[in-house]
Image (cartoon, rainbow, N blue to C red; front, side, top):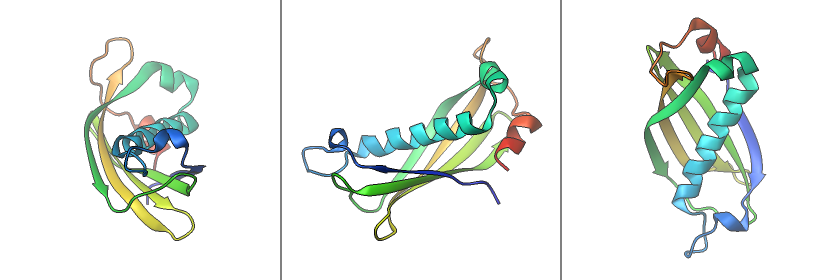
Length: 130
């Protein structure tokens, strides 16, 4: 079972679009931010200086809208890490009623930070998220 990283936050005014709900692109930004926070929380400075992650593909399923001031929680977890690629999942939900707002997946590629070339995911990195 993969470890789930999560954090709570309130929807800021900057996330609201002309339709008066959270802009779809904002959900993607929140997902990327959660992935980075998870990486930073698990990987030490030495590992983070050697490797960087690049996005290959995003898939987002929008389930329900969210509005200004609502308390949300985002969960993220790694479901696979093979070769140079890793898949990460996300769920953002409204805290007061546990309503799922989005479900998403991102496919990432691990790169050597110096060469900017793909590099196989090491056991050391793989076990950070097991």
